[in-house]
Length: 139
Image (spheres, rainbow, N blue to C red):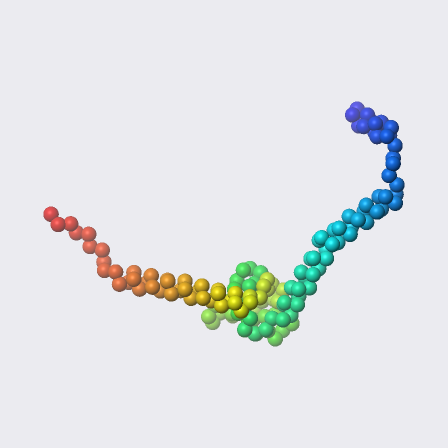
């Protein structure tokens, strides 16, 4: 019932647009999408591929899973061997590397880890030196 009335009202107004106007609008929308979405994404992909190809032995990396690691072997075009802890080496695909840490970032991370480790060791030492708690009350 209401649909018929809506069609009747739109027919009375007539069509004022033309095919060329519609094509120009669609073209402008495509250009805007290209400039705002497609081109920046392609640039980001190219930069990531260049970063992956530049990985070398000794680089500090972050994997896709968020694991910080040091590259031990980077001979293959598709795989890397990384050390995630002392003596623990894992082979990962280059594509899973999310980021390569700059030397400053890697040093800051190592410094933070060293401070946390020292604090944990100090806490263990103080805990070990504490005498047993003797809560005897005198009457």
